[in-house]
Image 1 (tube, rainbow, N blue to C red):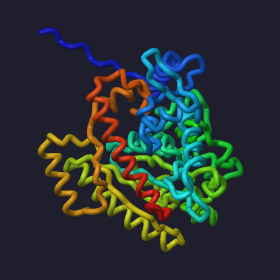
Image 2 (cartoon, one colour):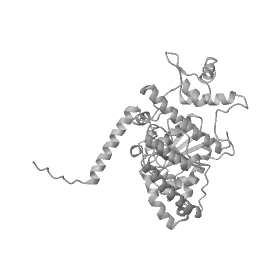
Image 3 (tube, rainbow, N blue to C red):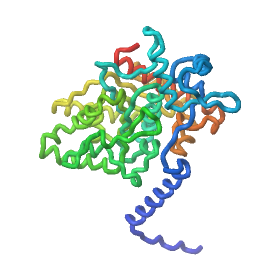
Image 4 (cartoon, rainbow, N blue to C red):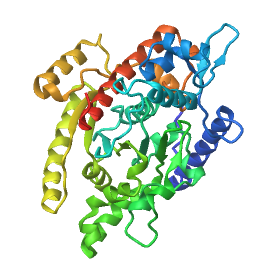
Length: 398
C-alpha cells in the first residue's frame, strides 16, 4: 500500500485572509447582479390583496377607491390585476386615515403624544435560533403596517445588515459603535442611520468594529464614570432620534456581553427566540440564569430595567416532529403565558429567500409553489401581528 504524503503546513492568517477576501468579492459580485446598477436593494410591487391585508381593509374597498379615482393609481397588469408600490401603500394609509370617520379605525398606527418609544431587543445566547430572521421580518412587517421603524444590527457578524443589502467590509458604513464609543470619535446616532428599501424602515448597520465595545468597556469602567454607567449609552443615543420612530428593533449578538447588556437596558420589551430541542432549552436556561444575575448587578449600579413585556418565540418549529411537539408542551408547562401563541414554523421558503439576501416580504410569490409561500407568509404574519398587538397594548390600545 502506498503511503500518503504528509500534510504540508501553511500560514493560517494569510490563508484565511485570502479566503475571506475572495468570499467578499464573490458576494459583492452577486449583489451587483441581483441589484443593478448600484448594488442597492429595490422592492417589488405589492398586489391589491397584499395591500388590503396590511392596511386592514377589504380588496373590494381598494378597488372601489381606484374606480372612483381616489388615492394613488396602481399599476394594472394586462390581466387586470392591480399592484401598488410600498410608497403608494403608505399614501393609501394616510388617505384612508384622513377620509375615514372620526370614530372609525385608524390606519396610521404611529405613536401619539405620551406614547413612549418601543425598543424591542431580540436575543438568544445560542446561534442558529432564528434571531436575525425574526428581527428582519418583524422590522419589515411593522414598516408595511404603517409604523416608523429603526432596526439596529448589534451583531458584529452583520447578518441583519446583509439582509438589507449592506456588505460591511465594502460599504464602510459606521456602526452603532460610533455612537456609543467612549472617546472623542463618538458621532451622533442620526449621522449613522441608513435608509433601506422600505420607506419607513431605517437601519444602523453592523461591522466588526462593534466588537471593540466589548474591549473598551472594561477599561472605561476602571477609569471613568461613563464606563461605570455603560448601560445608559444606547438609551441616551436613542433619545436623540426619539421623535423619528415608533419602534426600534435590536438584533443582539449571540453572546451575553456588554453589547447585549446595553441593548437590554435600553429595551422596553424583550423577545427570546428558542428552537424546541433539549440542547437549545438547556442553553437558554443557562442564558436566563446568567442574564438574571448580571441584571441584578447592573441594577445595583443604577440601571433602570423595566419592561412592558417579555415573550419567548418558538422558531424553526416542525409540527410533525413528535420530539419537537413534546418539547413545546414541556416549555408551555413552565413558561405558560410568556410563550407567543404562534410559533415560527420551519419553511424552505424562508431559507430559499435568504439565498438572494431577501425576506418573505421582498421575494416574488411566483418564485415558489403557491402552497409553500402562502403557508410561510401566513405563519410569519401571525407571529408579527401578535407582536404588533403587544406593542400597541404597551401604548394602551386594544
